[in-house]
Image 1 (tube, one colour):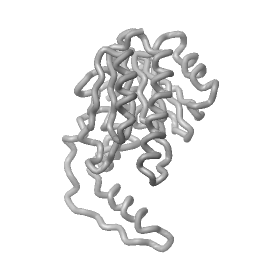
Image 2 (cartoon, rainbow, N blue to C red):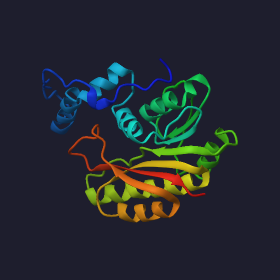
Image 3 (cartoon, rainbow, N blue to C red):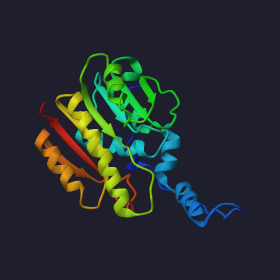
Image 4 (cartoon, one colour):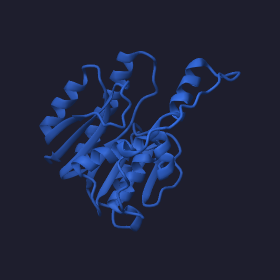
Length: 233
């Protein structure tokens, strides 16, 4: 039912039988390995059952289950929203599906319509993008800015780290413009050292700052999430 919180991802049953994928003609070994991991990932399977568009929906659900920053009636901005998992969770928990909250989202890639979500297919780095998002909120400040943005992997860990930190810092600059006092900022980063500079910036603007590794984040992934709460306008 709309507005109700769905079960936390870590309670989802594990796959009973491991599925193997044959290396098809035209498919690389790495893509075959990725496909096999997807087929045997309990969070991918749980996302399909729950109607979520991505396993990442469980990451946001898990973080919010613990820190409870998404509430009915709130205004949320979702940066890097494709394929829409975080927007789905935000719409459910703010009751935007019922017209009580408001979710505004942006991504370079197309996102199929989600009830209660206003979506822009646009590069967040475009000069007019921030103003479009602000106008879409209808004159209210945001309760939370959430970002699952990530640059396309280059295969070079340090380069990928710097790229995602740049995305996080740009998202933070935007959040400072649009968040209401006491608001929340959540973004994805990668381990690599430079995230400490981001934390220093966050501590100047927010009351509490935390590093989080959700259970639904793959153990072999370098991704972390930075949660900053209690924005000081």
